[in-house]
Picture 1 (tube, rainbow, N blue to C red):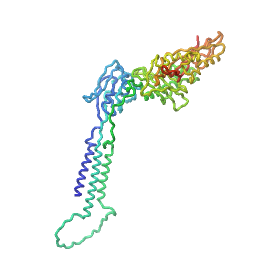
Picture 2 (spheres, rainbow, N blue to C red):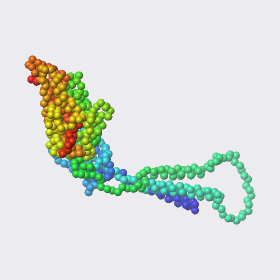
Picture 3 (tube, one colour):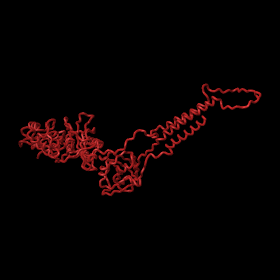
Picture 4 (cartoon, helix red, strand yellow):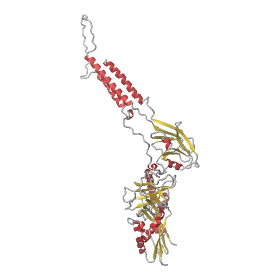
Length: 581
């Protein structure tokens, strides 16, 4: 019976192991679900919306080919469609009834598009010469844009794949159970063999027969002696199954081969985005986008500063920030001994990101950058604007923060802030009148009716160019010359970004013109430095006019507050100079 039980164990073990192995081989399900679509349209752009990407659960893998060049980018659906604009494009969607991908051509007025590479709208982008494979995990509000070169048709061969649950949770237990039964069969077999040996084989009773005559014994001359302490054959026979049992047990050790006994979370509705939960627009950009934008702005400004080439700035600067740097380049080109006066823009780290809450254009982002490698580089604040979907963000204001500046409490980057109008009644001082009011303070100090609206403590600009500084400058002139100061508001519109306390960060531009005239007909006025570099001469019998540009960053309290307006940062420099005719 022991042999019978051993044989039954071997048969049962073989069945269990075969079932376990079969689940992982012949009965295994596919590990992905694949859909293919061939786009026959000549449209230069193809869009795969987030709803299509999330038709099935799991990460999405895309295989894109069919053109000489392949470019793919993904961004928020509003941004992708904003960039597509009025161009012809193909929309790839998932037809649930047919269970297939469908390419729909959308008419438009543009048959060609510019290159989308390098756009600030993309969360990420990829490119290849002929074939592009990418694996992403995108939510429903993010779409993929495909382009060849903007003129040729977009890539025509698109495959979209999702992972399937190909786990075999019972293969491991079956293989392990088979290994245990096999080991039990081996034990029964060994037990049966030992029992048979102990009983010296089967015995049966028989009749006594007469003894036969003894046969002569012959001794072999060659004798074979077994190796001491080892029985030939049997232990080797047992070792092979034991090794096989271990191998079978190890083959089922992967996590996919065992049932998941951990507690499963209860399905709940997915959490809405912070802005969506309270019914406001999404922020204009993410922190990752702003970091990439700042890095590019830093690279462009560094290259342009070294080359003193204002044309290199056009891709990333405009408004007062562009004018100030262009004037600095002109000064340093005329006189190479003059050092740069524009602020260095580090490539990071980005300390503050405050994007505007909007889904339309133009879009605004406020950011603060502090160089953690060089302590001599002051902290810089930028106000960036993206005028349209196909344009990149450009720096309109670049100021150096005051050493004592403390930013108010700002909304997180994931929520963003509203951009207030120039005449907003929500603030204690309207942004449109801020530049003129502060210019009057610089011109008249305590005698200005606007003086009490601005905090004097920590305002280093008032110390540098205020009434006391102007008086000192006038006293340095000879009696044969006179000086006059006039202020004007810059043409650039103020930008106001709301803070958490209902106040705002406001950037404004203003200019101050300094006019030095000869007081007598025979007198001459001499100048030097930056004024001479821009004016083209250092001496005049009439005089000189110098225009200084100011970029100012204020914190403006909310309406009804008794707090003063605080100057948080500024940049000031010579923008133009000429000899008076």
